[in-house]
Image (cartoon, rainbow, N blue to C red):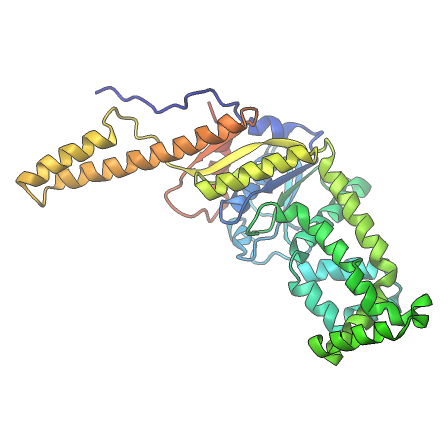
Amino acid sequence: MSPTPMTTERPVPLLDIDALLDDHSTEIIVCCGSGGVGKTTTSAALALRAAERGRQVVVLTIDPARRLAQSMGIEQLDNTPRPVPSVDASAGGSLDAMMLDMKRTFDEVVEGQASPEKARLILENPFYVALSSSFAGTQEYMAMEKLGQLHRQALEDGSYDLIVVDTPPSRSALDFLDAPERLSSFLDGRLIRLLVAPARGPARLMTAGLSVVTSALGKILGGQMLRDVQTFVTALDTLFGSFRQRAEQTFALLQADATAFVVVASPEPDALREAAYFVDRLTDDHMPLAGLVINRVSPSARTELSAEEAITAAERLRAGDSSSLAAGLLQLHADRVRIIEREQHLRERFAASHPQVPTALMPAMPGDIHDLDGLRMIACRLADQG
């Protein structure tokens, strides 16, 4: 039987990776998607290929597993960009890598916006320590804050002409876009204002009703925690507007033509559903979408033997020999064909609802990627979609 590759029912526009990386009007590439779909590896591979094609690149990862550091031969990544060794610089490019230090980035914001005395009060406050280390959405907010810092630095000194961002491994891909608004709204919210109200302005003249509220909150939160919150917000009061302004500036940066979003997914229902939500959100927010990368795609079976035919043949063989090796191989073939058909169906369904989204497929690799050669191979396969 002649091999017949499996194809989709309708043509899907191809994501031209090299055209994206070679376009110097693209200054930021944001790799986004739900957790566990390969964003870190995709970000690293794109950054490496761009550098070896002549771009001055920095890749920012927010992956707590630190796999990017291992893949790039850097023992430890931190909040400072560090050169990646063994990058082919013959085309004139370079590659730095860094890992987001969430608390350090928050500290930098405070130190840059407050007087030394007020900064000290904020940084030493127990509520601030908890907020900057573990508050829901802080990691996503600080990822965008660090992106803004890197972009401003690049404009000032020309250190980079491309920033590749690996977004946080959130449960939902949309957390990355929603977090800045959530955090700035929290810091500027009514409850926070109420907690600090007795300490400033006309609020000192308010009636005993406020005392009743704060007394009740004190019983719920604990007196010391309430005092910590009040002290923190009083010190941070002058920075409220700054947080909201910076969030709006970074959001505008993400909407600019110089930014390109690459949505990353795996050929699984939940991952592609998240990808669809994200594509729709990017469209609604007028953010530039470059395309979709689907990782870990099962290679085509390249055969005319269907899963049903293989199962029928296997059952016949087992009827004569329950331990038939050929029957076992036919069952494996049937299982593989069904996986391929399921993945293809999912991709076709996504393409039907988003026909204009350019797509690149990355075949599943036999093992983990742990060095630059592996990243080069991934980038090469993503670029070669012919």
